Length: 144
Image 1 (tube, rainbow, N blue to C red):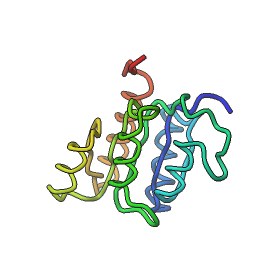
Image 2 (cartoon, rainbow, N blue to C red):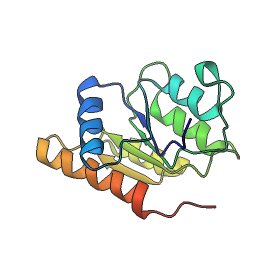
Image 3 (tube, helix red, strand yellow):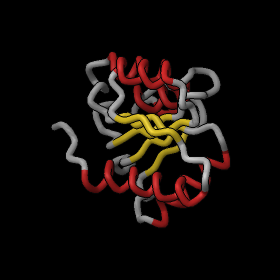
Image 4 (spheres, one colour):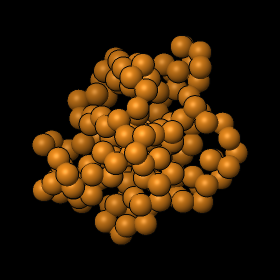
């Protein structure tokens, strides 16, 4: 598998499809892996389940993480990824519909790199996702 640039963790099919369309439009969708729940996200990151044998030390460049997920919620995914020495440097951007202060505070407490509330308005959503993808894949220089 080529280097994964974006791990997109999103359970809402509409938001997932729209996000992928925006990333494709901006030529950022070549190396995107999508999962629809927190358990799949942890399996990917830690090379378990259907991702057994995946090199845990290679990427992704960034994880776009929804908080309200089935099986394992986004806060727990964030907690486990940032607690493990092998994966704590993966930049995680929470992209969520939750504007609750406690979610934002807890996310930053656990080490999230950015917290973005999904815009409801279509054009704002498209711009936000395009800007996020471009910044984290093309501009940001990750930790060695």
